[in-house]
Amino acid sequence: MTEFSRELLNEKLAQCAQALTDLRRYKEVGTLEYLRTHPDIYYAVCYRFISVIESLLDAGQIVLASRGVRAVNEGEIAALLAREKMIPQDLATRCASMYGFRNRLVHAYGTLDDAKVAEYLADHLRDVEELLAIFQNVFEK
Image 1 (tube, rainbow, N blue to C red):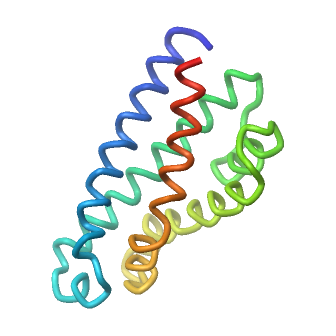
Image 2: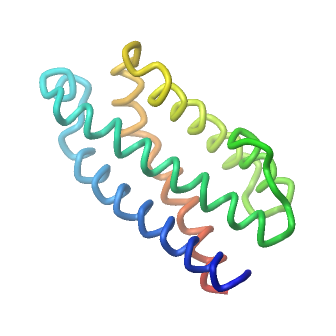
Image 3: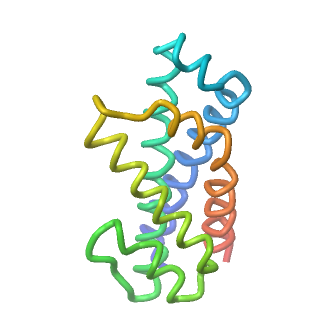
């Protein structure tokens, strides 16, 4: 991995870690009912999910490029990481789902399912944590 790639990966991992910290804090209060009655927190959660997922996708692309592999689009990143045996297949499946969730956040903002946002906040932060740990391990090598 080039020095530039290492610096870029480090930046993306730091962005991801910060967004994850914010999401963990929101998780403490982020029940569906709370999010429905506090739209400012709801939209902050949505934005932090976009940030965390984008950072992970960027990190995945950097890590793949360091192996001479390039995803044509962000939707391929998880499958390529699994194919390269960098992440387990079940995590790749969850990562692909996360990518779909990110697309809903970005492209269909007015039609978001607030229950899905609350579900991701309650149940999917560990997926982010797992990917982040894998990428941090690559960075440390």
